[in-house]
Length: 441
Image (cartoon, rainbow, N blue to C red; front, side, top):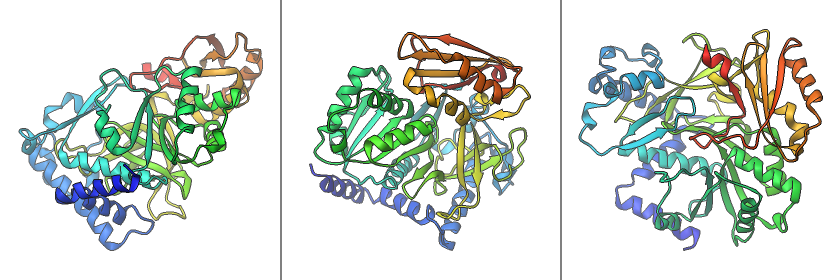
């Protein structure tokens, strides 16, 4: 089926059902724009008011806040809060209605399952389509979804659904040079342009393969967009992938329990544009629930405006970022940098935060020798570097250690350990940065 026919079928089926997806899409267009109208602002305010009213009327957890009308009057919650009060977060109105489970795999050590209602599921579908469109994707075009698919993964779709969506799901869990070669063959044999969503470490392995071996006819591959998910996108991967595939590489910020919170766009591939139509996002200080200052490291706090089955208000995602109110592409605040998990922030020996981007930068000159690396802070002044090498030897320990000593502190102790593999977590992520010292405190 041609792409334009798939697009027509999609919207025709939606029209038969009363156009719920089209209505969601129109709202995203209304609110997620550079200069939101008074109508858009009013719609967002209404969404917040309706959510508060619903949550305080129908859930045990929020009933004690029934006289509150502003989000700031509600407590900041996290995964542990939800786990310890799980049934209290369920809305009485949805106890006998169909629900859908969305589970985090516990990459933070805390697995969690969130129940979602039909409308929330529809919203997530359209959020995905909206942000794909912002990355040059056209509904019905060939789409490769390249992730670590687990055995009996609930997100694996039936073949007929994949065919209807013109979508291919590829497991990158045990990727090696042979599998990369097969994947590149498959991509270069496509007769039309394609779109790719891929976990960041998977794209990194592909780029390293191309650095090492190259690939015949790679220049003939027509890629509309590449969106990286699950992990932060390093400068090396971004620049390498853009060179090889001839398109901008964008990064998405999302999680399983909520959905797409922010994404870089073709018109602005440095800042993450927040999905203000579906969520309310706050940036709070690292050590308190007071608002953070612009360009200050902050915790990301999210309110889901659409999940009425299990209302989530002021949810601490566990991630940290910097934000800005000044952006030429939008009047909304944007995220300028996402650091990753709060629990895995690295600190110098004097207690100052050391950016994961700087860690990655230190390895930049040695990527040709390294398959994978992991940087671990084990104590206030002790750090461990795990390396999975391309060859048997790495003769640059002294240089690498010196660079880290200069940045982390001359009193730092930096050790090396050579491994055959940096394991992938149950979430499909491969952690490059780990802080076992702060986690244990």
